[in-house]
Amino acid sequence: MKRGESATALWLGSALHRGLGAQIDGEHPKEAYWAYITSEKERIAKDYTDRTGGVQMWDSEWARFDEQALFGEQLLKRYFQWYGMKETYKHEGVLYRPIASELTFQIALHEIPGFNCGIYDEVWLVGTIDVAFLDDLDHLCIGDHKSYSQKVNDEEMQRDSQFVGYSACLSYLVGALVSKFMYNGINKKLPTEPKVLTGAGPTKGRVSKANDIVTDVGTYLRAIVRNGEDPHDPYYADHIANLREKALLNNPFFYRRVFRVTEHQMKDWWENMLKITQRLASDPPIEFNRPWTGCWDCNVQDICNTMTDGGSVDAIIRERYEVGTYGTQNTLMNTVTRQTVRSIADLIEFAARKAQV
Image (cartoon, rainbow, N blue to C red; front, side):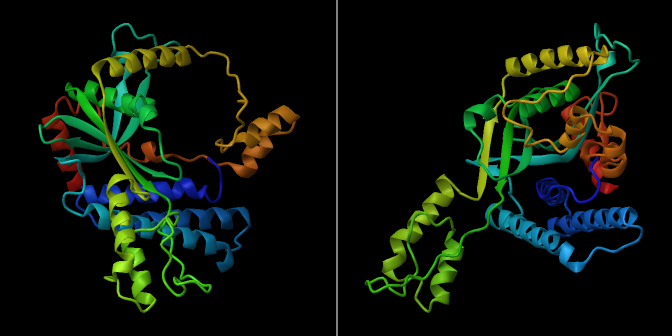
């Protein structure tokens, strides 16, 4: 993995995940969030001193990190202010009760009849599901926390390979079909403070009612009070009502949708996964691909660039990379398999034991 500070989108998203998962497990989300931030900061500091022969990072170098950490805390705080701490996952009249969070699973593909392991003795499918729910009919559902900058497309989400795949995996493990998955999105954006209007017109000195200001009711009311005005003034009534309606129908800061997943979708994903995995296990020739859209989302493109340009790949790896891990590997100590979980009841019991550790 890359040395030094990870892209903000990566560590901030992981920190938010930790806070959301902690609340499900009965812990304090803010404390869990900052515990993750502290460990990430320690990791970055150690890497820096290791690479510079003991030199400490300057305070100015930490400024951006600390700013983003405080920004993330505000996102987490606003999330629980909006959804609440008790019935947090109530959506469109249905209460989704969390039964497990940060659920890492391992599926032994080599134990499936007819699976070809190729050159390997064992092949495992591993992943982490953010949250497993039971709905009001005790149907099994899954959820995924996402921090986003651009809202997703509902039609694409309906067949999203991650959600359909996680549904298929959990269905396989517990022997009960997952019926729905929840996209639980937090926009990486805070409300904009509305401006006080200037000029010579009749609205001079009043808080702007422009519809293109992305804000919320609380922020807008505080702006009115700060401007020395009465928030109950009829002048602002229509605009405040519009903000309340927008928050309910098309909230610009939170995006939660629940999608039904069909048995056929999961079957199709499962069969495709087996084909791909068996091909990988057969030790195929490795090729790199430069998509026409570019490599904007790749964190290791410097390796490909060095290879293409005839440079020293080994030198790049020694200088910029280290042996590390990722979220799923970090949670392998609390892993469900078909040996530990074979029913929804087993899953609930497993999650309860995990929470007591």
